[in-house]
Length: 463
Ligand code: UD1
Ligand code: MG
Image 1 (tube, rainbow, N blue to C red):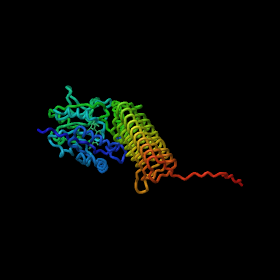
Image 2 (spheres, rainbow, N blue to C red):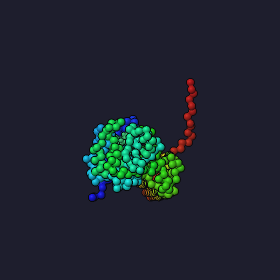
Image 3 (spheres, rainbow, N blue to C red):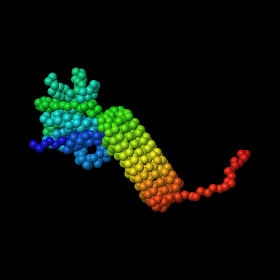
């Protein structure tokens, strides 16, 4: 027999009424990513070869959000027009299950399951036709209970609403996630009925069917409860967000970062840190961010899709997007680095400086109150306070080139396209419209006149 194909079924048909939202429940985000996207990403991490998404409510929105992923990874969209139960949901996938598949069933509103936990579940299933992911909860109210015989063998799952008083005492519950052989699963699914308190087709009824066939039902457990928790309302969603953020904070600390308060950092993407990084409070990291050894991020910074070099310091209240900050470079406080900013080693950007699509050479500085866009600034250049690159003529963007060691006087307007040579100087307050050669001084401002004998006006009598 060829080795089994891992066929992952994600249930996402529910409406999620309790979210009180126009957005389908599974699209509500944890760390800025839809819950169902977390589930699909995890499925890929464990080597899913086929992905089935059972959808019902909010089809258009789901398709809009997942279009790129779906196309890239060949998601099979399976409609469950009416939500008649979890068993009914999986029944819709029967035409897309082959006998040789290993089918893994996941829930689109349970985003925090770790890949290792699912790998353990698949390992438990290996030699058995069915394996369940179960968890023991201090308060099992509402969950399906795992029923075991006196020898410990699983014999069935009974839903809370169908359970006896005695069964209500069982604290081992069904997470809903399970792995099954394709052939057996199809057989069991075709035998489901809805003779129960809720009048639903329960997926969980397949467990008693398997037991009746003499199948050994394996089980495994997650490392932490948050891995199997779903969100039915925004309170639970916020709890998942915190659980996720705590996990991310722990990962950063394990990797060598000191977090001044692990409860006051938010990671919304892929972040890597070197050793001895220090991240102060209220820092938000989004997209792909890497922070080099010994770098310091001061409080209240937002850093998106950026690379921070070793020993760099991002001072308080700075906002970075698409920036590369070189080793030992500095930015802030109150700096704004926009896409295409590259700071060379030891470069320094001060307060209220906005930089866009601009390369700063080694050790170059812009200390205060500037807009620098579409510019190339040579090593060691000094950009005075209030300097503006006038890069936009209302139609096109133009480039400003500033040579190494240049000194741009305060309040200079550099009207692009313009080139300022190396070691050149511009006088404060200059409007520079033509190129300045190396070592030259450019002064482009009205000449000062002093008027001797000038009399200040005197205040007129108030009548
Ligand atoms: C289900 C389990 C229960 C388990 C619990 C864990 C059954 C019968 N019960 O109960 O044993 O303890 O999950 O949370 O399986 N869905 C569909 N189509 C449907 C019905 C549900 O796609 O027709 C999806 C929902 O969107 C949701 C998931 O399946 O993501 C679970 O459905 P839900 O109604 O929450 O099941 P529970 O009653 O909580
Ligand atoms: Mg539920």
